[in-house]
Length: 198
Image 1 (tube, one colour):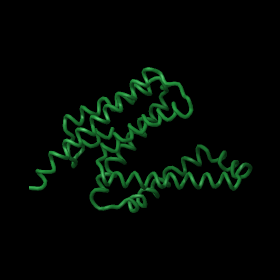
Image 2 (cartoon, one colour; image 1 turned 90 degrees about the horizontal axis):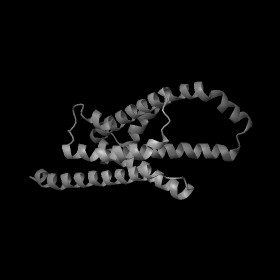
Image 3 (cartoon, helix red, strand yellow; image 1 turned 30 degrees about the vertical axis):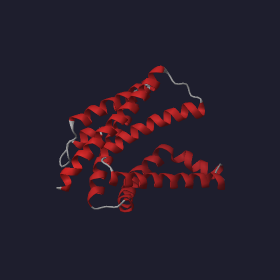
Image 4 (cartoon, one colour; image 1 turned 180 degrees about the horizontal axis):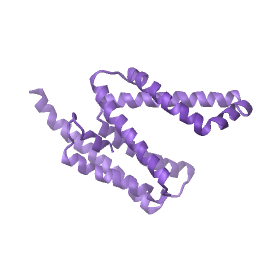
């Protein structure tokens, strides 16, 4: 999704080698998670919508961050619209359960966990915008796919979740694709640097 949105002007077009390196990254993640799919139309629609919105946030966030914004200001401009969209949906879908929870089951420790979780989410958004200021949106997306593979390995290691051969192969393909992408980016940076210094 991010690659397709990057093709919308005014961005620098990715090279053919970069696009080729993305095939094992995406294919590996698809293979790793293929056994976990339980297809239904609402879930598929929500997944595609989330991918489109996240891709747009990555691409356009990276564009804005490279020009005139720092991560704090970007968070300041993104958070209020997100609150306006998500808060009514949260009330609509889970409002009664949350209200009952705070009336009956909320303890100071549980509220501290919720506040801490909010702080972690804020830190994640802030660090995401900082990373987007330093790297391209495509590199950020590749790193996100690598993170998915790490989560799979940690869940196998810590929680002893079973890992099928297809999932393990998909994870290895994704790691290889991420390494290939990194090598291509490194080659591009080292070949572009002498030209830039002229």
